[in-house]
Length: 281
Image (spheres, rainbow, N blue to C red):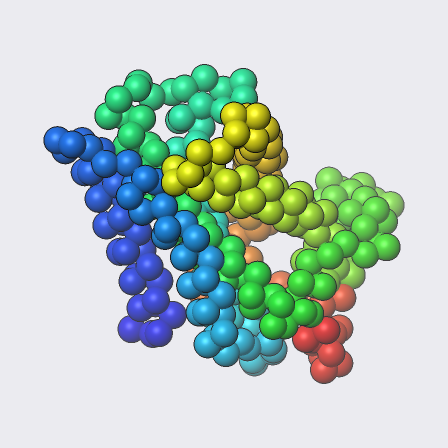
């Protein structure tokens, strides 16, 4: 088994066991709220992510025969830890209720269980997010390639017009990430920052008394950012996993590779950079 597969299996097992434990301690006699007993882990998880990034050796995209390395092992790890963490936080957060969404679980054991599951996946989310953030700071070009350019409107209009069969629209020379994806990235980035900052305040409230006004504002911002993240997450799943157009890239989030043919067709601008030796920038 490859190192990448072993890492994936290990992370999956750790958090599967964590979810089971979260449920167990919420149902046993003298039930335990993990945000109370393990609050320090919420602040330790980001440090672990940053520490792990410091020991990670990254690989830049490259052409290998008829395949292109799109995602290295670190990219896959940070994507799935952040992504699965986000999904489970959304599920448990919605179950506990937010803004206009009423609480979906009864009080008592069910609420404690959802809070504990929320805690477990907060750790996964924070590890993956800070692992990504530290990797990005160490390789600034990885952040730059996510940012929209002046071609945003023209490329997006022609890209989706082409998909809809509008004859006047041709597929633009998109880079590694579509211009429309880059705008969505800004939404996800803003939501993630707001969720983390407000989430850390909410975790701290399990240790020290904080003003009611601060907690009210914190909860409101946390909920609004969660709704924004939910919209992004649903759109991401639709375009990356449900619609066939996203399946080649979805596969690369497991294997790391896409075909040269797919890159030429969907990412002509990126292919040009790959073949000119300017891929990392």
